[in-house]
Amino acid sequence: MGKMKFLVFALGLVLAIPTIAGAIQTNSIEVTKDINQDTAIQLRDAGSPAAVDSVTELVTRYMTNFRTCEPVHLTQTVDIFGFKFSYQFDINGWVDNKCSYYATANIGGLGNDIRDVFQIQATDEMIAKVKPVIQCNFTREQLDILVDGFIAAQERKVSEKIGLAEGETPTGKPKLSPAEEKMMQMLTTSGACTIPNQEELMKNFTELMGTFQSTTPSSPEVSVPAAPEQKVEPVTPEAEPVQKPTLRQDGPKVNMPSAPSF
Image 1 (spheres, rainbow, N blue to C red):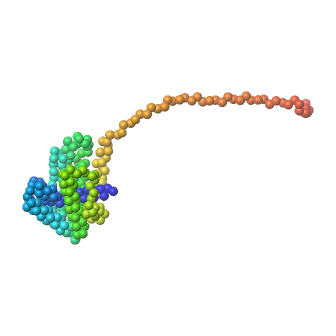
Image 2: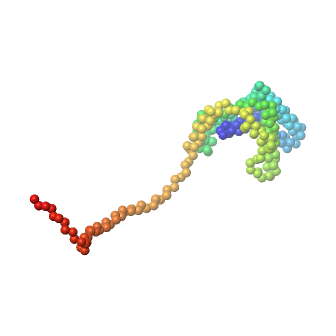
């Protein structure tokens, strides 16, 4: 069960990268906005059809690069008021006829504001130790499933945002498309992704969870008044009077010989 949870975490890492990948052709990733469908919608609303077409073509090329396993190497650290988050993502191209993926991420610090609001007692060192390493080796078919699922997820998110902008009411948890469900099944059951540091990771994660449990306030104890103590005196049964046997006077009399005298 723990391995499945971390594989789902890996899914979040893997699927977040193509959105960031819109910046890989620029000189500085940190100052570049993500190029995705949201940007296309903004440009469309601004009344620039040519720009929309250009962005659409660029996104299509990026998706083609992911589908053909073009090498990509991304590393970034974000620090906002003491909250530090870093990640590394690598697509290493085709290795033994499989597309090699590597991803890792961790939280290096929380900051005083987050600690005060959520009353977190764990140290930054303990939190930073929870650093999953994800390695995936996708066949060509599995890579197609991954890219198709990601594209479907992006299209669904854009549709949901457009619907909310038009006044629709959220209907709870979004329903995954068939392509997304197929992608999730592939990631969690095919064995394409592994966690090499799983044993160490589970140990550090368990220690971290222990700090949260120890700080959780316990339920107030309710004192229930005890019933008044009742003393029960032992009851001593009255001894029944012993009746002395009575000799019958009407019975036959037997003359017992007296003892001889010496």
